[in-house]
View 1 (spheres, one colour):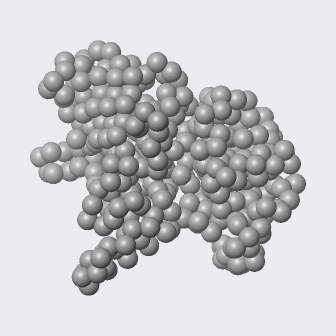
View 2: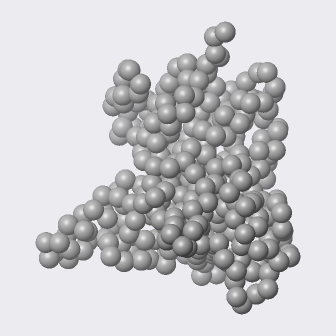
Length: 343
């Protein structure tokens, strides 16, 4: 029996996440019948090799989305109008920007956590309905992947999260800046910062994206608000401090939880180890714990350092790390499409 295939578009195809989406469509053998690539006018006309042929990049501003089944958008929130235009033309749009994440009418989904929120787009035995799905923020995806198994067994009363976020979250220019500053320091030159307000090489910046009126950052606000939506916990007491670190690609997070009842580290490890998309790496006797280097290029979120919080009888601490470009962006978007095709 011939497998059904789909017309797929990738908007923002020449960016870090767009390139990863293209690689993962191939790696995961997504049923692509035809492929179209879009980007800014600056990139229009370029050719991108995919599988065994070259695909010409179209100008997103003028692209016609009629006939597209799935459109993966990684073009930034400023291009939200084009994402809506694609949905209106009949595509199922999975958008990686922040444009739609707080819209209650648009599903915000991590398939291993809240697949039921896609029900409005499911049509069993047929293609999904046209519409928009929001891909959560990268740090949020990694957080909920690790804590959802605990939430399912023992409701979370309060969570405190500190993130250690790789520069890949700021795109290709940030990766170039990290490398350039390393070379500048090696040769005795002053470190020039353009992407970030201060040098990132050999440094940590307690500032991700922008400050808000109350002194938090937009990244911290995203993590809090999106996690509440994904976990179905609008009442969740959650606070975050988001930090940029001189790591290329994988984000890490230190998490402190207070649960509604006491849970042993052994119970917590068993729940985490059984969860799809999560891999437990936690053996103090052999110095087994996850690091960003371990997570780079991996599909799973790695979790370790699961232990009691000695300051609270219902407290647990844990550490997690995951590839920000893969599960934190491209992979989750493709998994949303795969979940929809399962009907």
